[in-house]
Length: 166
Image 1 (cartoon, rainbow, N blue to C red):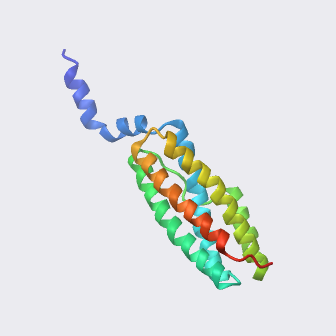
Image 2: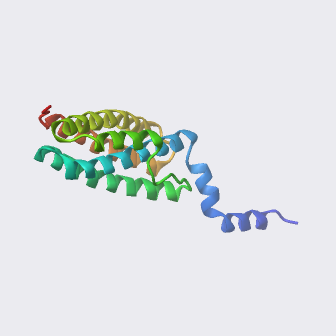
Image 3: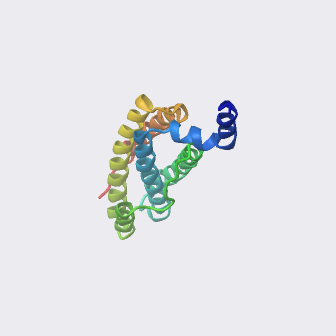
């Protein structure tokens, strides 16, 4: 029996699964897992800052973080989904604790903690996006990482411009 029809049948029956498994490396999967958690934290912390910030600068920064990282998260979800990769839609224990700690603060202490958290997460995510943009095996993920790295750098600049009041 000619094996070509079986190969063609398999390619027709499983095009997404076969391509998806091969299109995302272990490093890409680790990147997706890491930045999806960081992004969800930034959305929730940003929403919290928009509501609970003591100054208008923090409220505005929070609104920007929540909006931008929601869009980034939606794009990451679509790219990961196309590659057959899923990730949780809830925060892990570490980020849940960080968010709870942030929620417990008020006034200038909240603002200072929010800025510290955002500066820390942007530094970590910025490095991850830069690395992924340089080394990803998936072209869509590589382009996404390069574009998002520019957003992260912009956010870092905006965070540094917010006057810290403690």
